[in-house]
Length: 588
Image 1 (cartoon, rainbow, N blue to C red):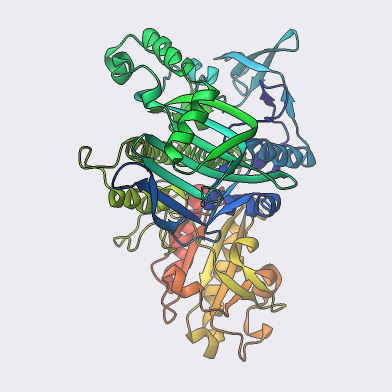
Image 2: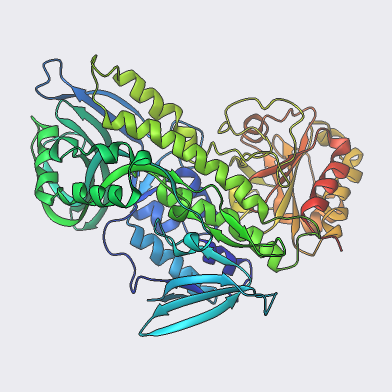
């Protein structure tokens, strides 16, 4: 994701290496969350995922029967319980996501160089513009490169993280799980839905996958193996155990898990339903754990943050909430535009734009660890009076966590890129209200120029630009001349103070077109924002964003689609927006 976005932003001198000699062909992550789908759509990379992946719209919850001899469905709930452009998850092979990214990367002048492992890095100030010296091995040779910046997305055993002097801090639990992808034959009625199943003999999660050929469809099954392997107290309390010994014990416990045991345990949990497995594509065993680093970035001797980590290199957790690939990609999405602005000389002197990466994403990692700890613990527990875990508690955690797990409820804290909110934010973070730090919620509009129905996200693609979004009040319809000055300020004067093309303006008016004509808009709007004048024809914009039609409002949307500023009043918007943008962009 980082390399794809950097190429889109015009950064051509990027070396992307991967230790693997080929794309992933089996296993790994497979779930794409709604916010990730929005980002892929903004990159025009969502089509194959949406049309060929398996869409999950609801989740079936199954629990033990009263006599404990079987399982019974107790509820269907929406898979995504928050407002979203794509109100569902999609499962599709990670290898296909890699291929989509690789093809786009090559289209934009770069490619992944495979078979190279980063063996170490250090700062060397012989060349202070390129102070990061990276050592790599592969293809029977050694390689050394100098770089301005290094981004390590090299997994839980990250060499880049080790060079930063950082460790993943947290715990392993005593829960061992098996996972497999296979073509199944079963009379279980909800096999094509995501299911969370608690039985008296353990728990499993069913994740439907895409069709692979003809009528063959993959199904992923996560199966709790706790009763199948020897419990080890040193694993249950890793903070007091010797780390090396703990790792060895964990490996021994995982090695006790075999494919045959995963199949047998899955059959026990699903009884009295039957299930058989064919065309097993992949299987593995893992222990649930939640760990994260305390930092995501390291500075050189001059205080410039040069080295960064993302994804599993800085946070690991259980896979059942569908967060790993999503949070990792959003790390890269957040970092990439900030690196591009610095490299392209767009950020102002004295503004440490790159520092906001750790400020924002470390906070999200901590929330991820907290959620996953609660969710995975409840999923691994048994429902019943002896544990205190009830079906209602489990469903509540699942549903209330949907804002975070979907990615739609992420809210960044106040900082350089997130202006202070003068009033207490109302509504849940995923509600769609215009609040600094929250994503701009997609709304359906009609474009003025050609009466084309538009999703506003499609008119604000990922391109490294800030957008000034002006929602005009009702009075504009009857007296458009009264708003000429503020429109000229937002559409022409303000964007003209910054490097060309880095700021563009979106103009929204309430209701349908009615008697409005092109000449009712200032010439600068017609020239600079012809394709970005949108009417609230469907009545979604003001209602969703929480903007009073009688007052209107103005917001600045960051290059990653998050709201940076909401102006307090239309007549003061030009000054407020100008102050915000001067803090994050170089003036000309």
